[in-house]
Length: 175
Image (cartoon, rainbow, N blue to C red; front, side, top):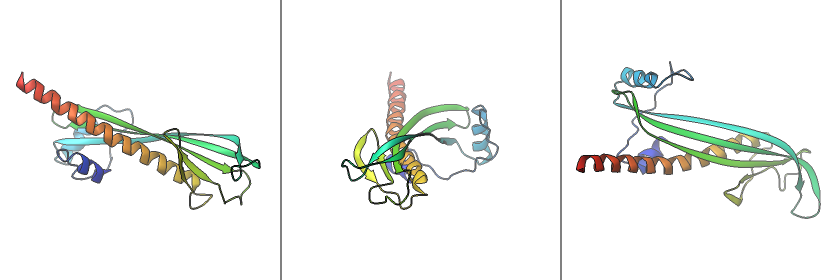
């Protein structure tokens, strides 16, 4: 994420990643200012990643023909949020978020590994498929794919938020 932000937003450079020691869930923004002061920084970019999943039974078709097998579908919805905090003022200067979705289909009976397990990027790209390296590791692969999708969208939205912030500053300075 650091490399991607530095690449897509050259005027906003992430120099280092700080440990989240002392940061409490539900705390106010001042805890991020304190973290930045402790490390001698002017700004802190706070990134929060979260996800939720739901699994339910469904019928899986084998080879896309009339044969079917009982299976499970697991949907993962991932969210990645970022805020840029001015350490001196304790204010949030900009915010952005990215969301990602992916679906894992797998049979209840193991050994049907010609087609399953399979991960889909639904609903945005239903023709894209990924076959996880192992049956047991498929749920973790699902989470990684969904979070990567969220990170891609976060970068686009962060770039838009940065441009809007800079335009607002230019407008305020010129008029």
